[in-house]
Length: 120
Image 1 (cartoon, rainbow, N blue to C red):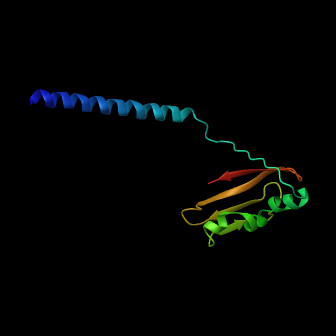
Image 2: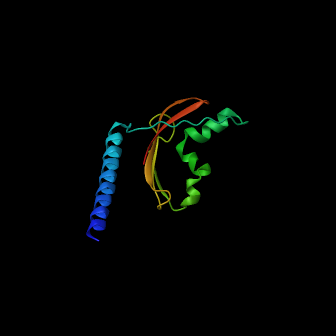
Image 3: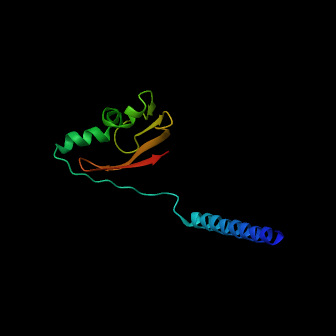
């Protein structure tokens, strides 16, 4: 019986050691990963470019088509003084599903492209 307990203790120590090495490795890898990531979406639709662009360049228009409003109809939104173009922003605070954060337009090309920075 004592021999069996010694073997179980040895297996337990091995498992704990391997788990510790794994966690240390994950932490070490985490230090080398980038703090920011980039995400890009491109979609071609059959519509008037000026009309579509007006729906995304003015952040107040996002309330009309954003799916997040359906997840939390009581979501609180605060807008910058200027809601269109470069440096325009809005912040939101909602339920657990929506969370909170801030979206800022960082750059755009009229009727073609919009770049945003999302902090959450």
